[in-house]
Image (cartoon, rainbow, N blue to C red):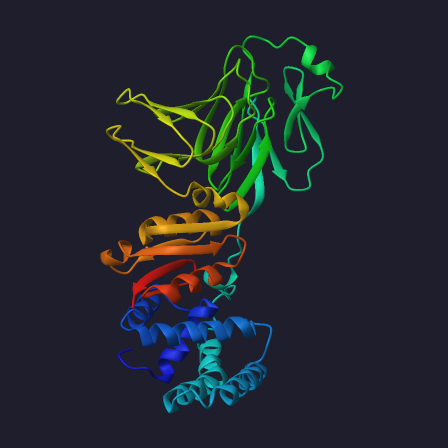
Amino acid sequence: MSEFTDYVIDQIIAFYLGLLTEEEKAELEAWVGASDERRRIFRRIVGLCHRLRLTVGDETAERMRERVRWKLYGRMASDRRRRTVRMVSWAAALVVVLGAGLGYYLSSRETEKPRPPRRISALESKPGERVAVLRLASGSEITLRKADTGRVDIGGGMVFRQDSVRPEQENGAGEERPAPADTVVHTVWVPRGGEYNLTLADGTAVWLNSESSIRFPARFTGDMREVSVEGEVFFEVRADRERPFVVHAGEAEVRVLGTAFNVVNYPEDPRLEVALLDGKVRFTDSIASGTIEMAPGDVVRMDKADGQTTVSREDVSLIAAWREGYFYFEDMPMEELVVKLRRWYQVDFVFATEDVKRMRFTGAVKRHEPLKDALEVIERTRDINFVDFGGTIKVYKR
């Protein structure tokens, strides 16, 4: 496929319909990766097929041809003053191929078992939703969603109801019941493509980002309130001078009285990060046995391999903006940026070359917009192309 031909259009449509062999898909991907122009053509044809909702078996080729003609003629009329002759010619070729070339595919492969249309992730992927799983100490699991109103007995005279750990009896009788010394510990974890917020027994508010979890007791006993986290978690801690609030995050510990801060501790990340919005916290790592007293605006980053830490002054409100519906990227390498998108949109990314990984992006993206819109924001400000190959998005440098 060295040149742009009717055969190329035919292959792109067949790709959309899920009719290509692995060898043919590899050939098409190589063709697409050769130039910006080819990537633009590929995305336009796939986008057109997606909008028309072409399927293998529920329409005739003639009906498909009529729909495509109607779509293309309207587009060509509106674009005529700013499109080149070449664009008109390939658009016309698409009409022919959908009528003839697609018919060829349907007839030549009619003996094969029909496959469902491929999922075009960049066009169809939806943003994450509010969902989590409550894993009780007993091992049983309960899915938590936005409209849940039920209650779950979690021990110690406490229940989990309406996203909060509460006394079994709201009039306070539950608080008077003595708690066992070995109060059971439960877990709330958020899957890929989710987010969740809850309130702990002491009134501390917690927000969990995608692929994150918190382990917490049914009720806090003793002279400390302790929890453990993985992933990205934001806290607004209820002040209690008699009982410090302690967050265990891997090899680090954050101790506070009453404050707001963000913790990032994904197992696969090489660094652990704590950003303080309000109050005062003490950051301690068990690797180098170092302690840092943090003030609002401080960001501590610790290398998990050797315990080396750095402290910087930053606009920490941007770091925690994910709980308010935004991604803020500050001079972030693409290799790190796509990890955040993967966790939220449940789509995988690969890079065409190593140098694309190191390209940096600064800007804001709305978390609750379709992935397609987020990628377009990045493309408008960087020399980058995102091309979807039906489940994996490949990142090219323009």
